[in-house]
Amino acid sequence: MSDTVDTVIVGAGIAGLSAALFLARAGRSTIVFDGGPTRIETVSQVREYVGFDAMTPAEILGAAREEATRYGAVIRHARVERIVPLDDGRFKIEVDDRSLTARTVVLATGIVDELPPISGVREAWGDDLRVCPCFDGHEVRNGKFVVFGIGARLAHMAAWVRMWSSDVTVVSRHDFTGVEAERLDLLGIRIRNDEVAGLVHEGDRLVAVTTADGDTIPANATWVALHSRAASDLAASLCEVDELGFAKTDAGGATSRAGIFAIGNADEPWAHLAQAAASGTTVGPVVTMYLLERMVEELRLAKAA
Image 1 (cartoon, rainbow, N blue to C red):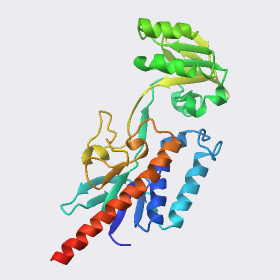
Image 2: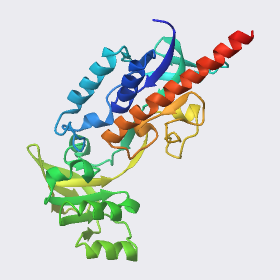
Image 3: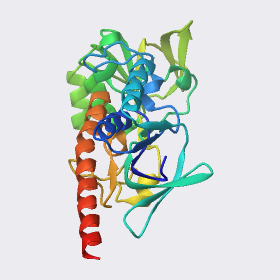
Image 4: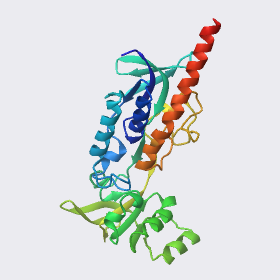
């Protein structure tokens, strides 16, 4: 394989693999660097992705890998450590103990959720501890919900999950404003002036949460409002990012630096799986057109030389 490729994709989640599929089918030499498990792999089944409902993340990602490689994309299990812009507009990709050069880079590096430091959280993450009822609220509908986490987001989160159950309790010492308190009261949402200290399971089933004040609140699903951040600082080293490290892009995924693109949760933290896949399909033709324009310019310069 040549040490210069058309595109390096950093991240082998559904966004990166979707972009790889398009670019490989467009005849572009494409390498995908897989730096490890993605956020979607924390759940046991994928929901809200038409045509793939109840499939496991491994099944969906496995099929996506097979499709991308079938058309010539190469997937390498390695972590990209650094990307250096070169004077000729290309990029030096530093990974492991070697480097290669790419004409374009697509960042599909994803998102990291910062879990609260309470007992049982990591074991429950992606199952009994949830962040989005759009994804899996149906599976626990009409259950006993407990909502906790970042105070400023709790009123919205509690009201939103109320659409899936009328039994909702917010556990927080947050001082809800008059409008927030009225909204929660109108929806019949209880407020407990306390903090969640742990999750209680019987076998593999969530049955309650414990609180800092020593109480136990029955629950079969918990919803947490938490902080999330960009999973990689590569974007911050290459282009404009927001305060959480997510790349700022236009509608086609282009960043502030020519030749650098960002897709999926690397530029849109709220993107669901289907949206992430769509972002890969969207960026594919944009990258291809960018490569075409670079080719035309290089041919023009060569002809003039």
